[in-house]
Structures are given as C-alpha cells and as structure tokens.
Length: 77
Image (cartoon, rainbow, N blue to C red; front, side, top):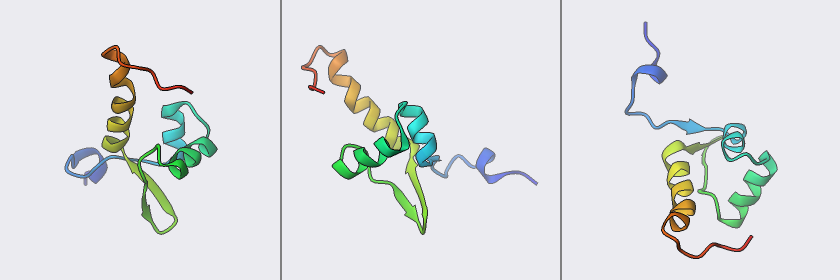
C-alpha cells in the first residue's frame, strides 16, 4: 500500500502554524499577528486544524522580495 501524501501530487501541500513559523523564522505568536493584520494569507480551517497552502505562502514570500530585486522602494519596518 502506498501513502497518498508521498505519491499524489494533485493534493496541495499545507503547513501548520509551527511549520510556517519555522520557515519564516518568526514565533507562532507573530504568525497570528501577521494573519490578524492581513499581511499573511488567511489559513484554511478544518475544525480546530489550521493550515496554510504552501503555494500561497510561497507567493506571499515572492511578492515581498520581488520589489527589492528590481531596485524598488523598500517598505519601512
């Protein structure tokens, strides 16, 4: 028998809050602050389970770094 996670590429890959915090190198609390402020994509909720689609997170990261590559103005922190 094979695992659906490792063989079925049609399903979107998702991240939990801990995984997302680790990727972004921020705390879990900061993840929730970014979500509340509308900066991070909204998660998908399955009851109490909260997940982010990896492709949404990658697009969010790309959108934040693209202007810097093109010499555009930096956003103040």
